[in-house]
Length: 84
Image (spheres, rainbow, N blue to C red):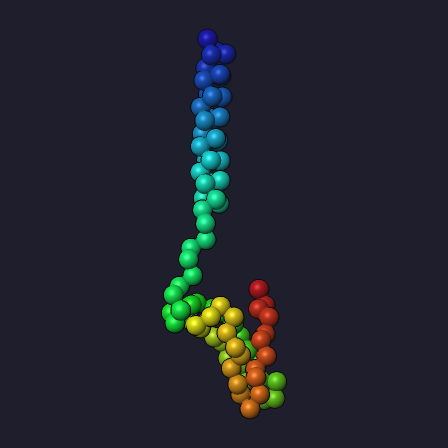
């Protein structure tokens, strides 16, 4: 009787692990969402620094994922790598 209970528990654990695994694989297999339509703003987190005076600007929303750098002191600002 004891071995039958162990087999039943093992089968239940096997089914649970398989369901969790299949759920994870299905979530990874879903395609990436479509990009927003042109003209709609996207969330970005970019920090720029002026090489002349040291002014820093953080950009949080832009029309593209890789926007052009802003200008300051008549020069393009430099992108700063995130500290994270």
